[in-house]
View (cartoon, each protein chain N blue to C red):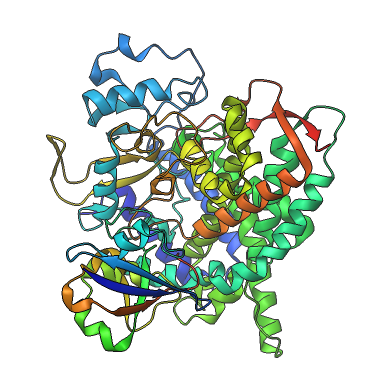
Length: 106
Length: 470
């Protein structure tokens, strides 16, 4: 078990618990966190689970693959530590991680 | 190896680009019209423009699988599409029709298979067109919806700012006041056609704003779009006059060239550029000379016009049709207006205003036990995927609090996912918020008239009667 903090664009904070192996998108949707849509259900095909990982946690989340890069490149709010939540599979190492949400999921 | 017509289109595009600096764009297109007409007289047409005459469509269960042809442009109008696609999903989810009026093509009808094709742009190309048939010969315009990466990515990124958050926020107030104005002007004492009064009017105004197009001429945008998307050879639509389509393209070229030059001059004079589409194109180094590539210039403007026209318009009408077929949902909505955002997704799923997108296999691909050959046309039927029982419970029911309504495929998936999705949702959300403020009921008083097309699933006539809030 671990915890991830989601910070909405208006700075509202939400904490979601996770078991290792689930994705950042899944725990956000399961915990009804506003600002994560997950329209395609985790197929890396819609770009609506965009999160911006805080710098100190970014390297722990791995590197985005080609498909993910392509979807991220379509959002105007792309940042250097952007990830798609469905492609970040949580490990115990990520307990305590903080991610920011963009203003809009495109 | 490119096919012969494709090569001809390429040469034609290069020729037009090369002469665009000295010949006005509308003249070039008029020239093309005569060239094509002469070519048809000399060599005969590439494929004759089909003419579609409506006849009753047989019950799908009386047909052999191989005779099922879902390209019939009357399938939606006659209400037969559900049964046809259900049979394909159940018995032949990857189905080959070898001699449709549009040529042979594959139909992919299950949600999971469609998602796979849509995501796999390395296996399936969106070029040169995303509609089932061919555009009128000589009018093979280039648009990024029908381009593969990396060219697609460059062009799309140059215009997606028009629907970026900053713009959406600025637009919200404008959309709300216009929606209110239109709803307040509707007759309360007699039935009227909702399509021109509301759906067309609101989407036409939105398009004029996105393009910063002269407001009083906005009806032109709607007419161009209707005819482009309604070409018989492309989608089985009602428009079969190729000459009229060249005239439209020339008219568009004239209007947009003027708009482009005007903006260029104002910017040169020190005016701050706006957030409209043309200003954005001019601000991006990849597209600032787009006007010198006329087929691309017209193509991308057409894309934005068609993309923002039929889709939102028919979702605005379709929501009313859905509420009338499922009146308990309207009661549910009035009791819980906070369901509006989810209801908007459900309307877009239920209506699926564009039935499909087309791809061409770039190599042999095994799918659903079939071998799709390199070069074959593949149609991803979103309208069927959105009613796939394997994905959605009771898929034909309209349920405004459906849990997975957002998972619909009307926006497509992958790199071509709809760019205007948030704007569309915003327009629909505001429409319904403003409807609830004013009306206790909107009754559909006649059977709606549906358009002739295998692509656009829309309404030409929707007679309604309003009951104001007491």
